[in-house]
Amino acid sequence: MAEPLLTLDGVATSYGQSQVLWDIDLDVPAGGAVALIGRNGVGKTTLLKTIIGAQRLTAGRMTFHGRDVSALGPHQRARAGIGYVPQGRHIFPHLTVRENLETGLSALAGRGGGAMKAGVPDHIFDLFPKLAQIINRKGGVLSGGEQQQLAIGRALAGQPSLLLLDEPTEGIQPSVVQQIEDALRRIRADLGVTVLIVEQYLDFAWSFADSYRVMQRGRIIRAGSTRDETAAEVAHLVNI
Image 1 (cartoon, one colour):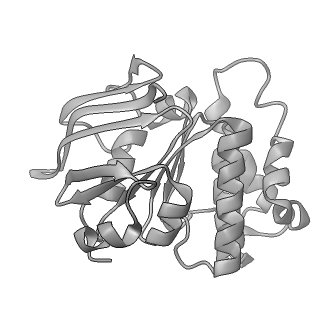
Image 2 (spheres, rainbow, N blue to C red):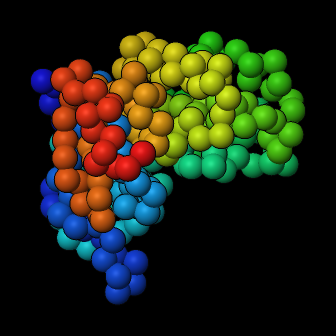
């Protein structure tokens, strides 16, 4: 098995006085794809926010590329190579597709080499040809599928080595879901990006990811391989 790119060791976090994650241990192997599954409200999104630094650790340790990043803030973690596509996509509705993509370049600040000056990488348009066709269209008039492609492209503009996606298939028609899955496969194969997804649609999770983690009440209660178990065998644990 590949060495872990990301490791969480005994991680916990709280909202005020209310603890929401307990003793999270998680390894995400370099080049792999891991799916976080579970009912709504069990802490999956909170875990992603903790990884990107938007939610502070109250216990435990997080390492990325072998470096302890527990104390780093969101911008520092983005610059270290952690990309994030939030649930609901959160694109800027009054900016064009190009301008939205360019906001992702901020993660390159401080890396040197003129990466920011080079602009949006061409491979984003290779992955999502539709974006090139609508490059001057405002984000607010795009379909859900187009917005999701834009959100993924924006995250990729920062050249992450780890990409986190929260419910990437939510509210998207099946034909576009397949396009997104195909693009994510290319992102792994061609760009070498490691992927961690939160996904309610188990068929998608099993088709794309190598392994899964089940969350309940702020804890990871089960881990396994999507090759060794079927989605149906695990579905009862998440009530999906």
